[in-house]
View 1: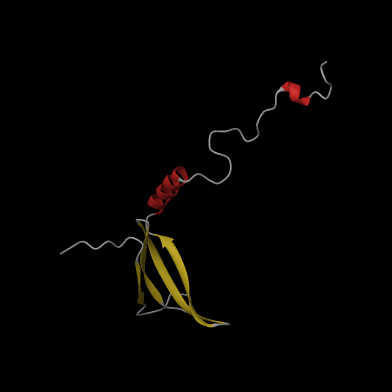
View 2: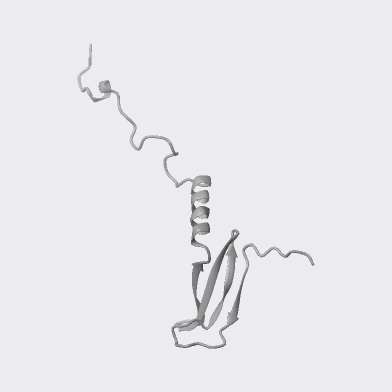
Length: 101
């Protein structure tokens, strides 16, 4: 049997028994960039009709933290490149208003 790549895919199953209205109507899992998450869903009514409300929780919190660290290293935050001081230091002569000649 051939291995199936489930990366960036998920599945929801209808809950057979719900103990309260707060329990999800659907449960399953999803794989996002190789990280596994639990996925819960509820059908709700809105102004435009019915919609799914979803909740996502990491299956392995340690793996998620490692993923976030790797992503932060691969894609640094926008703004100043890493390793540079926050504000450039000015030379002493740039603060002097008098002309030296």
